[in-house]
Length: 407
Image (cartoon, rainbow, N blue to C red):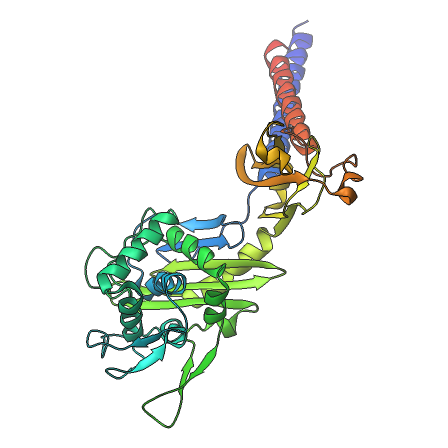
């Protein structure tokens, strides 16, 4: 009898240990599976104190390290100088070099006192050679004075939502403590500027010849941005350095119709870091078309007025949702053919909207066709599967626990 009881206890202990091992195995497998479903992009590090990676079309920040920390930005300032000059100035205007601009400290085009040059050509000198004399001359011409131009710079920063930025000069020289920006702010500014064709053409130029009124030979300006020759598809933007700011760089590249821009502040290994961050962005956040122009939209009599693209991780695609916001039929907009808007959400947060228009005769024949990859604020199949798997997982844990403590 005693032997039988001991054998039973030994068997009971064996079963409990076996169940514990089985439970641990289930936990390991299921937790690994759930983590693989929700895993983000691979980790990446840089030598920069502050860094940001942005998709130019959507404005989505894809990577950020101390992205909102105000820092010195050196000659990256000239990105703001250039876009303000392009928007407020006239490219054919003649800019005259004043006493204040002549022999400005730091990097220079070595313009002569009183020398005259078109605003267009001077912008090339500003962005390719980082001329501080050009920055001052441009600012005085476009803004009426340095103070007037700096005011325009800060107004543009407010307009773009650059909350951690303030400018006190057009060059980025270390003139005081009030001149700063952040990696995320500079990324926003760069994405905005790259949508201007004049700016884009200037910053992608590797070399520029400009007439020299003082000599028989022309100015021949080579772009300081080595990324234009180091990275396939590189098309901008600006280098920067001061003793206090250290090495700063903004670069951009376009591949497969997608343009990305990288900002690094105080980075001792910037060329390599930019190549890695650009490659990281293209590999992990390809630009996806969410809706096509003219596409019939479920839940509306209208069609999309434009195409909409957004950079997405592979696992984020199942988190997309769309919903139609109609307009009243008795409004003037409705009579003019407007049919509301298509709201686009990622994981419950709105990432964009596309206005809907009355379909033309050709489009009306397509209105009843099923719309792929979209539903009106409904969960996607992938999410439903993930949710049901998680419920099944917890049921298994509860079952094993009950067996362990009731056997």
